Image (tube, rainbow, N blue to C red; front, top):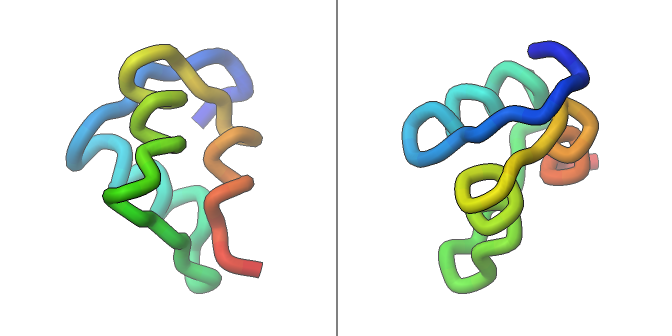
Length: 55
């Protein structure tokens, strides 16, 4: 994934999170649609995706 803006929805978004976060995993709360709103409705970067990785 490059640092430019990406539109990622559904399975593509989940696959990108697996790629970016690796073994750390990531957190996703359907009730809180922050990442969906950011990456699917608008666009996000690799660095935005990293913010959803577990510490």
